[in-house]
Image (cartoon, rainbow, N blue to C red; front, side):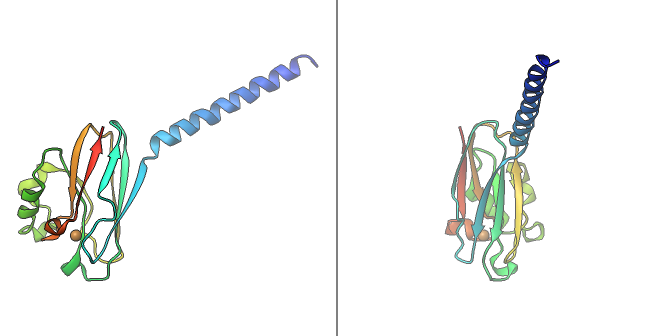
Length: 156
Ligand SMILES: [Cu+2]
């Protein structure tokens, strides 16, 4: 009995270590990397370049840190498919107020988008299992793209 005890303890310890290790791995695979982006009344995204690895899942949290009303200074973050003409998307968005500046004619170009946010509001999008490519992102509120509310997610 005395001889077998240490063996039992060590195998138990190993089993526990294995459990901890596998649950840690599962947790890290399930938790996407979070990228916090703010926008404000000066019409700028705080982050304009994001890099990710193919297969990675990222969560983008957009916060409108401004104070002006949503009707005058709303912000969203629209991730477009690689190769999309972001200027054309932005131009079409001007007449899409009813759908919060996501034009029906361009919907097939959208990977994901946040809601249109008024002051002090946040929304998030999760981009799962990203394929390699350069994904433009813009704020599609009228004129904001032209002023520079744009960026790119590079997956490579
Ligand atoms: Cu904007």
